[in-house]
Amino acid sequence: MGILEVKGVNKRFGGLQALGDVNLSVQENSVHAIIGPNGAGKSTLLNCLVGKLIPDSGSVMFDGQSVLGRKPHEINQMGISRVFQTPEIFADLSVLENVLIPCFARRDGAFRMHAYETVANERELRDMALHMLEDVNMHDKRRMLAGSLSRGDKRRLEMAMCLVQSPRLLLLDEPTAGMARADTNNTIDLLKEIHAKHDITMCIIEHDMNVVFSLAQRITVLAQGTPLVEDVPDRIKGHPKVREAYLGE
Ligand code: ADP
Ligand code: MG
Image 1: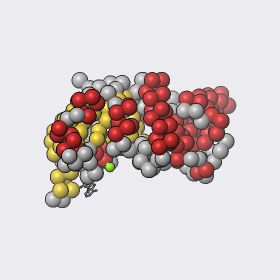
Image 2: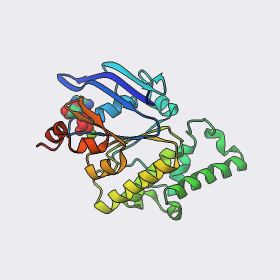
Image 3: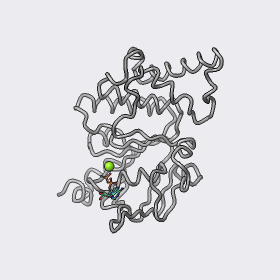
Image 4: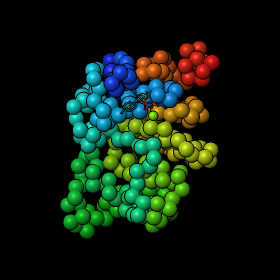
């Protein structure tokens, strides 16, 4: 049993079958990539996992519990966090302030809005945020305005904001989209570091093959809303069906 088990998920938008009978099993602490051409249904699938969309049928189980029918913030509380295609940060706040905000929404409920009531709590929160910034190599930039960061650093900051909530499953929708090669390589390294340092499962939607092959232990290929194959990267690379559907050969 994987930490995430998707079974027979269907989703239609009017006449369009965006997802047709999708099965997906993501093993705990693995990096699992979902690839496929534009319009394959990757983002739709992700939206079904975080409660933004409700499948027409099928089941989505996270750590043995159904996520269906739960609100996005409840699913987040269960331990599923999502990194957006465009980093969602507060441009007018400092890097440190950005990381302090999600500290209040930690999954273990250690802190809530009353967390600032005592100086001890305040220090603990700040230490936690600073520690997380060290983890993503952003400690030196803690006083900078988040809006002034490079794209790669914004991604780092967003990762810190996610990780400080101690998620168990991190969902990433094209984390390197629109990035120059240097920032892309940086992001690959960052994700590798995070995966090595934290007990975390990652599910990555990506169409940059370099990113997929350097990170994923397993790859699911979606085409027209249906999984074509699921296998280890080496076997995906040469798979005739994948070359046909994905590379247009
Ligand atoms: P991918 O992320 O793999 O590029 P999407 O999941 O975004 O693909 O989209 C799958 C298909 O569903 C596409 O044909 C897209 O146009 C359609 N689609 C996605 N979201 C909606 C929506 N909210 N309403 C109608 N059609 C949608
Ligand atoms: Mg998409």
